[in-house]
Amino acid sequence: MPRYLLSVFGPAEPTEFGSYPTREDMLEAFADTGAFNDRLQREGHFVFADGLEPASTATTVDGQGDRPAFTDGPYLETKEHLGGFWVIEAGDLDVALALAAEASRACRGVVEVRPFRSAESVEALVEP
Amino acid sequence: MTDHTAAGAQAITRAHHEEWARLVAGLARRFGDLDVAEEAAAEAFAAAAQRWPRDGVPPNPGGWLTTTATRKAIDRLRRESQRDARHQAALMLHDDTPAEPTGPVQDDRLRLVFTCCHPALALEARVALTLRLLGGLTVAEIARAFLVQETAMARRITRAKAKIAAAHIPYRVPSAADIEERLAGVLAVVFLVFNEGYLTGEGEDPLRVDLTDEAIRLGRLLRALLPDDGEVAGLLALMLLTDARRSARVSRTGELVTLDEQDRGAWDPVLVAEGTALLRERIDAVAAGGAPPGRYQLLAAINAVHTAAPTARDTEWSHIVALYGRLARIDPSPIVRLNRAVALAEVDGPAVGLAEVDRLTGDLDGYHPFHAARADLLRRLGRSGESRAAYDRAIGLTGNAAEQAYLTRRRDQLGG
Image (cartoon, rainbow over all chains, first blue to last red; front, side, top):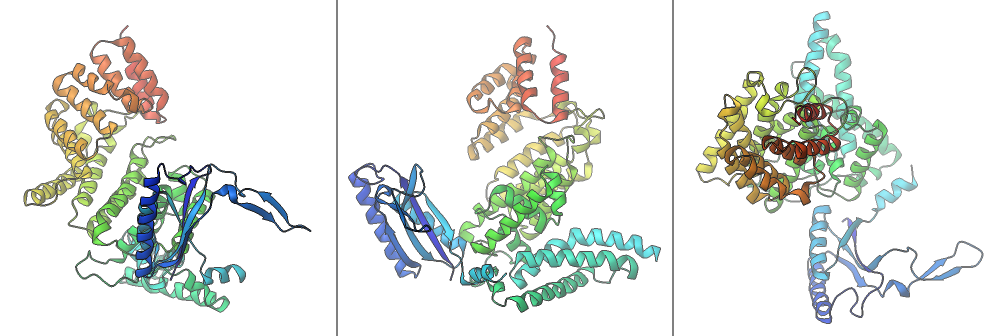
C-alpha cells in the first residue's frame, strides 16, 4: 500500500508551550493527537509518528569530507521547522488527504502530505 | 480516391471531437497509466489520418480507433516490459474501492474528469490536463491559448502526470459525500477555460474562440455524463447564453461593444434557445423540489434576462438585481456586489449605484471593471472630471485591446 509522510511545521522559536499559545491549548492538542493516532492504529494506517525537540537542538553533519563536520543548528535556515511527523499507509491520495485534514485539526498545525517512493519507482530510477 | 480524402479528413475531425475523451479514458482505465493512454490515443489518430483518406472511413470509426489504440498501447507496454517488468506497476492508476451501485454512472470519462481536476494539482495544471486529456488539444495548441512556451506547457503537463502517478491520485469518481465539492472544482476549471477565451486579458485577439468552443464542448460532455446535476446544466446554459452574443460583442474596428449598445439581431438564436431551454428545465426541477440554484444557474438566469429583452431598454433590471442578491447570499464576494450595484443603478438611478460601488473601493481598487463601472456612473451623474480619472484607471489596468479602445472612446466623449 502507498506510504505517505505527513509533516507538521512549527515556529523556529517555540514558546514554553511549544507552538501553542497556552498550556491548555497544548494539552488539548496532545490529547486530540493521541486519539487520532489510536484511530490510525485501529484502521491500519499507522506506521510511525512522533514529535521533535525544537530545531535549535539539531546538529548538522557533513560526512563527505575527510573528517565529519558538525554544525550547531538545523540544516535549513527558515522561520518554520519540522516539528513532528506521521508515516502512514493509505490506499490513495484521497484517503491520505482526508487523514491529513484530521491530523491537522488534531495537532493544530498545517500538514504537508508527501508520497514515499515505492520500490517500483526506485527500481525505475536505478534501471533506466 | 479524392472522395475518400475529403470524407476522411472530415470524419477524423468529427471522431476527434466525439471519441478522443472516451478513447483516453478507456485506455487509462484498462492500462492504468495516463501517459500510455494519451500516447496510444494520439498514435491511433495519427494512423487514422494516414489510412482513412486513403482506404476510406471504417464503418465504426470509434471501434476502429479503440482497437488501433489498444494495439499501440500493448505494443508500448510490451516494449517496456522487456526492459523492466515491474516498472509498469509503479505507474498504475488504481481504483480499489468496491463499485457503488447507487453512485453516479461510472463512465470512464467521468473518472478522467475528476482525476484531471483533482484539488491536489495546481489550477493551471488542472486546466492543461483537462484540455489535453479530455479536450484532445495538442500541447502546442494549449501553449498558444495560454501564451506560454510549448516546452513550458509540456513540462507542466508532464509534471502533473508524474504527480498523479507518484502520489497515487485515484482514477475514480469521488464518493457521494465529496462529489458536490469536487464537481464545483471541475466546473471552475471549465469556466476558467471559457473565460480565458471570452475575457482574454492579454494578446491581440479580444476573443479566443478555440477556448470558448472547447469549454462549451467540455460543458456538453459533463452534461451528458451528469444529466441530473443543476450546476452542470447551469454552467452549460451560462456559457451558451454568453457565447450567443460573441459576434455582437466586438465591433468591426476591434472595439468592445457593451450589452446596451450591441446589435441584438446578431445574437445567435440557436445558442440562446438551447441555453434558455436548459434554464427552463432547471426552473421546473427546482419547482419540483430539486436543490436550490447554485452560482452557475443564477448567472445563467441573469444572462437569460438580458437575452429575453428585445432592446436594452426592455431589460428587466429588477429581476437582475434580485438574482444578484441571491447570488450574493451564496457568494458574498465584492465582484458579485459590484455587479449587483451596476444593476441597481438601472433601477434606482446612478447615485444609488455609485454609493454601493464606492463601498467596494478597498476590495476592488486593482480590478479594472470596478473603475469602468464607476466611470460610467460618474459620467451619468455629470461628474466629468472624476469620471475621466476613473476611465484612466480602468484603461491602465486592462490588458485587453478591445476594452481599451472602448474605454478610451468613452473617456474622450466626456464633456469638459
